[in-house]
Length: 405
Ligand SMILES: Nc1nc2c(ncn2[C@@H]2O[C@H](COP(=O)(O)OP(=O)(O)OP(=O)(O)O)[C@@H](O)[C@H]2O)c(=O)[nH]1
Ligand SMILES: [Mg+2]
Image (cartoon, rainbow, N blue to C red; front, side, top):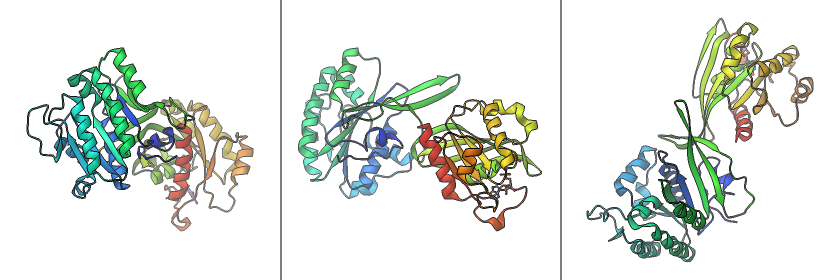
């Protein structure tokens, strides 16, 4: 089945590839959570893929939408000039000002007028596929009453006729249960955006709670996210622990994987921790490396707390250190978390291969072992973190990300 990718990390896989043509997907946000960046990111992805896009703005001026899109590092300017991106201004009439857009709704308190305007604009957009973003259902319900939702059925008929697909923004203010149920029925897919408060940290996550195409998706898995500007929606993993025996290559890994990193080292060994930030494959991740020496074990549990996954570094040239890694996984309270073994120093002559490591550590098959090597052996200095090969680092990260979400 043909689908239209959103490019939101992980979302497309939960939607079986992306948005199904001629359907309505609701970005269903709880108050206080922004859903618009999800729509902007999809908009840019679809425009870049050659689709036409229509943004029905009923909650703010089109200029404000453009400014926000720019804030995330994207631009609609050239698409607007090339007549691939249009606003359907349903806001100006709400605040009694004259619209500056080519397409506008005279009285947007009457949803039937939006329907008529939508029908017209989709004739103007040509024959290809069009993404329609509606901002927002909450404004429609607030200004036009809940019966206006019946109009969505008409919109879907128009989508069918004119090859369009909708992403509709909705914020769940305290509405009547009947209103919510009706929305759930009319929509084809729902992506919920929720938050949990943990003392002071507010963690946000999205869940695909409904998708009525291709039925076999894994629904209800929550994906933590944050919105980066620039960059847009990122899967956010606040803590991954990088642990392993003394001298196994933890600092090397953290530094090589990170866009920025710090270590607290003394004469070549880490005495406090390594900390690095990773921005890769739609993920935004903080890595925390532990010291390797046993005298620091009392702080292992502290460092391991709240990790969502573990990278365990193994020095492939040191069979005697393998037992120590297992011990550290236990001490950091990270046994049971998703774990990937990075078998470091695989470039050295006496390195064990992954099968030997698996056997010696009696690791189950579902724990991936990825070989990692220094970028240039001649540049490896004793007591200094080595630069590791990027593609191998990415293989480690991919393996772990797939286990976490
Ligand atoms: N040849 C080779 N050397 C490596 C590799 N990775 C790390 N090293 C070297 O191994 C030594 C230890 O690396 P670190 O990254 O400091 O190890 P660590 O686990 O942080 O060590 P502690 O903090 O002391 O526990 C350094 O001299 C590195 O240059 C690798 O893949 N190949
Ligand atoms: Mg270190």
